Length: 593
Image (tube, rainbow, N blue to C red; front, side, top):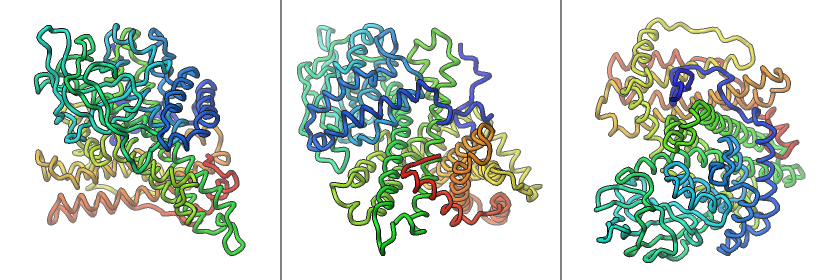
C-alpha cells in the first residue's frame, strides 16, 4: 500500500508550507529528460514546421505521417507501459514532450489528443486483453486515437450525454446511437474512446473502432484556430461495438472521464508553457529588429515593461506547472510495485492533485493568452497579418480556456474540492480557519528583512492567511448555499491560483539561490519580485470583494481591518525592476532564467 505519511496532500499549499527539496523545478531536469526535450524540439523543427501551412489547409495525410514518425522516435510511447511496448517514462519526461510539442500549434493538439485523452483511458482502465490489442499500435503510431465525450447538448455537463448503448439480443455487441461533437483527430483516428449510457442511464466508456458498422464522421469543422488539427462530429447509428470493448465497469464511465480530465488539464498546462515561450521569443526578436523614430522598439521603456511582465508571468506559470507534475512523480514513486501496474491506483494518485491540475490549466492558458495578445500588440499591424507566426499563435491560444473544462468550470472545481477535502478530514481547513480568527485579533505588523525573497516569502505567508480568511467567512455566511454563490467561489479560486503561482515562483528561486547564489539567480529574483507584488495586489482585490459579499456590520469592518493588516508590505518600484529584468531578455531574444 501507499505510505501516506510522506505524501504531500493535494491543496495543502493553502494551509501548509512545503520543504524546498519536495518541489520539482525546471532546474532539476536530468540529462535524460533534457535529451527527450531536445528530441522533441528537433522533431518539431525538422518534421512538423516545414508542413504547418499544409496542415493549416487540412492536408491531414501529413498528420498521419507525422504521428508515425513521432512513434518511431518514441514520442507516442512515454505513458505506455513497457509490457505493452511503450517506454513507460517518468511524468516529467512526458510533460516535457507536451511542452516542446506546443510551438507546433494545432498539430500539438493532434499529438496531445492521441497520447493523452485518446490513449490514457486504455492505459489506465483497460484490461490486459484491451491493452495488448491496442497499446503497442498506439505507441508506434500504427493506430491513432481520439476521445469522444462532448455532445451538442452537453459540454461541461458530461453526465448529461444523450448517446445510448443497448446490448443486442445475442449478448455479443452493444449498439450505440448518438453524436459526439468537436472530436479532435476524428478525420483520421482509428480508435475512439466513446461514452454512452447503457439502457439510457448507466454512463459507460467503450473502445470504438472506426471501421465498426454504424460508425462515421461529419465534415471538418471551420474553426477560428488550431486549424492544423482535425475536428469533426462522430456519428453513431446503430454502431456495433463488441462487448469485450466495454472499458472499465458498467456505469462507472464518469470515473474514467474525470480522471482523464485531470491528466488533460495538467498536460494542457505544460503545453501552454511552450507556447508562451515561443510567443515571447517572437515578440522580443521583432522588437529588436523593428525600428520606429530610428530607434529599435525594444529600446522603448514601455516595450521593456511589456516584455518583463510577460516573462514574469511565464516564470510563475512554468514554476507551478512543473511543481504540479513533480507532485505526480513524487506520489507515484511511493506506490508499491503492484500498484504501479494498476491504472486505477495511478489515476487515484493524480486525482489527489485535482486542485493543482485545475490551477495549472487555468493559470497556464490565461498566461498564454496574455502573452500571445501582447506579442501581437508588439508586432503592431504585422501581428494581424497571417504570414506572421504570432497571428496563428493568437488564434490557436484561445481554445485553451475552453478545452478540458472551461476556465470557469475549473475555477469552481478549486473551492469545491477544498471544501470536500475539509469535510472529509483530508485537509484541516476548518481548524486552521478557527485558529486564524483568534490570531487576527492579536496580529501585529512584522518587520521584513532586506534578505533576498524576504518580502516575497512574507507575501506568500499572508496570502495563505487571506485565502483561509476569505474561504472561512464565505463558508460561515452561506453555508450549504455557498455552491450557488459562484462569484464568491471564483474569487476564492483566483486567490488560490495566484497563491499557488506565487509560492511556486518563490520556492523555485529559493532553490536557485541555495544552489547558485544570489548573483547568478538575479533574473529569477527579479521575476519573483515582479510577479509576487502584482499577484498579491490581485489577491487583495479578490479578498476585499469576497469579504464585502460575506460579512456585514461591525464584523465586516473588523474583517476588513484584519485584511488591511495582512496586506501591509514594502512595495518595490516595479518600473525599475521591469526595466532591469527586460535587459537580459532583449539581449538573448528569448525567455531566460
